[in-house]
Length: 118
Image (cartoon, rainbow, N blue to C red; front, side):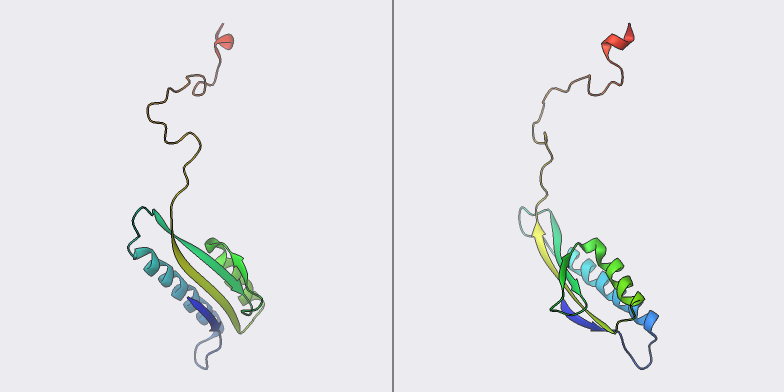
């Protein structure tokens, strides 16, 4: 989705137009997440760009979209640019993950050490 969204309509009031745009974006993201993933990929990641105009657009995180639209509403702008591109991604392993059967240290689970017990 690469789109300059207009927030003016002769019959629809501005706050309802804002809510309609937010709903449209949520529906697009849900639709993209339902698509089948390529082999060996874990989830759909999104590259997002947002700005007042296409020339001023900056990369943002997916979770920041609502806040950015709210800032557009507070400034009473009549349009904004949004770009959301879905891409398959693979989760990064956490440290220590992947070692099956590795011994666990009991000290890491206990809140008191042996010296405190005496």
